[in-house]
Length: 347
Image (cartoon, rainbow, N blue to C red):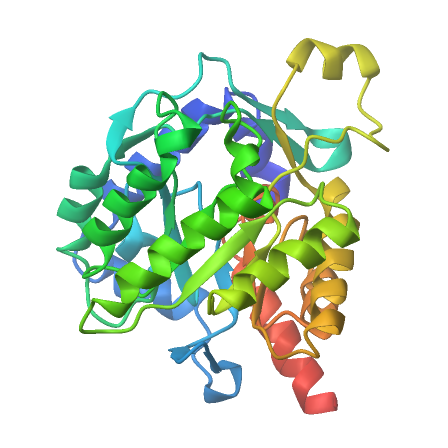
């Protein structure tokens, strides 16, 4: 129904407009008594066999929503009702910012992909905290953190410091985002000295807290295997709890969409089906070099139940979807969870 009737209508509209429309619709619909409960009952699978204990947290299922959909933590309850085992909000920056000029989000239906150059558009730390302080207990929420665009890299650590401390009481785990291709010079923070300094600061700050929050590093799919190895080793050196593999890619290789259209779209991070093999190979590589001892959240191009199972079999402890959710609709999470249960029962 979604693919045949709803998606064609939504895909006639600007992607960012559709996102706002869907967010408002979810808010309005769930104001009706018991509707959230009904939707959750229909779209969720709560089976103890799906649960996973990863970096000290018990996840009700391994299928989560990647950062970028709920940038300001406005939709946590609504998205939980759609069956997600966990939700990652953000990217959150210290100050609110508008992001890059519009248009900045584009669909590539022939490739089952998206290109975006949103630029960390969000309302800022204070707005996120306001929402997170009201969230219902029992929903696992991760916080994806970054720096403001206008902050120079030589003082970027201060931005991460501010967001880390501000979000600490309100979220369950952190994801350090230094790999987004849509912020000018952000990826320079992936270089060894800069990354070491940042991770050292965050883990030192964690030691001062009364409760432990896992910290994960989100890496780029455009890294070579040697570069990925270096980043994973740095993460382990500073006691990080896991890796998120991967962010979006700058690559445009292998697309079937018309070349002129791609050129017209311009810069931005590519997500969706063309990213899957890159992400899968990095998950396999990280699993190999760490002997499977460092938890991985596999994300990038999961567009089918088979993709989800492949990512888990490659070594991911958890997975996240985003573009696959947009292309497949609200039943996609349930389909993946059913496939996981079936695979586990047949093992």
